[in-house]
Image: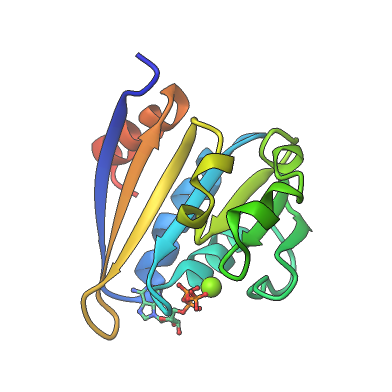
Length: 159
Ligand SMILES: Nc1ncnc2c1ncn2[C@@H]1O[C@H](COP(=O)(O)OP(=O)(O)OP(=O)(O)O)[C@@H](O)[C@H]1O
Ligand SMILES: [Mg+2]
């Protein structure tokens, strides 16, 4: 059953709480892990990514890759941070994203819902909904066995 999904919901009341989720996921990450991030402007996709990078052991500051599309960092594993907001799916096809998705690092993709056809079937989707100035609901949807396991482990143990 490779289209089986598992969902889990995380309620965040501050950027610091979002960081605890990012930290938990950074510890679960292995080579080839893929996490997609969707949500309105200012929802916290980049805030999540910065915290994830920190807990993956990336030294220094991780900024929004909006104008560069892809930025690479070195932590416990390589980190590929992408933001596809400004490109179309056609343009994205020329970027060779599979090299990143199936590489030795972890990929984080902001606005991934813009490029549905270019995403591998196995991934963890994060959808961030803004409820208030600091209130967010972060919905996690796992596709594929490793990510189903991540969701189960978060549901059982918390972050
Ligand atoms: N609970 C929270 N989780 C994450 N960020 C929060 C939270 N509460 C407030 N914030 C703030 O919301 C803002 C999120 O901005 P961020 O750049 O991460 O959004 P984004 O989703 O990447 O937007 P864009 O689509 O423009 O790139 C930051 O200023 C952050 O401090
Ligand atoms: Mg962003």
